[in-house]
Amino acid sequence: MVKMVDDLDDFKKQMKNAGDKVVVVDFTATWCSPCKMIAPIFEELAEKYTNMVFLKVDMDEAEDVGEEYNVTSMPTFIFIKNTKELERFCGANGDKLKAKVEEFSKQ
Picture 1 (cartoon, rainbow, N blue to C red):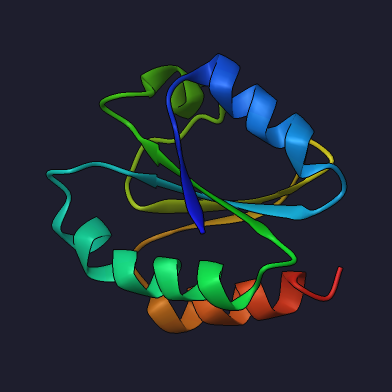
Picture 2 (cartoon, rainbow, N blue to C red; picture 1 turned 180 degrees about the vertical axis):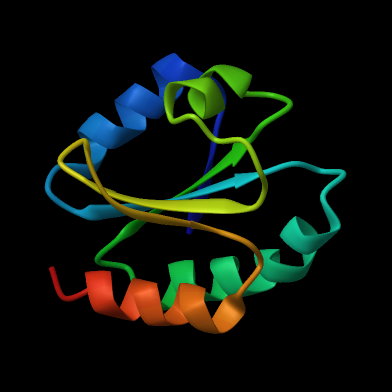
């Protein structure tokens, strides 16, 4: 299941609740066409990899989270574990997203 993030406080709470699970964060916007194209893949991965936490940050609604992580383009995907950034990439590359989720699901 993908959880929407309301603001930076909510994001920090979600990160704390994740414990030692890998968190995949999708920085998106409602007006972003590539974001809309990759959204179903992100949802599908969230259903498949229940050992990970999937968060979605709407940059227009939770801009403070994007600022905290210096996100400048969308979609941006950031993989985090125990508040430490493991990796990030930009762009609606479904194959890359699937490969990275698969890779980090083993941690």
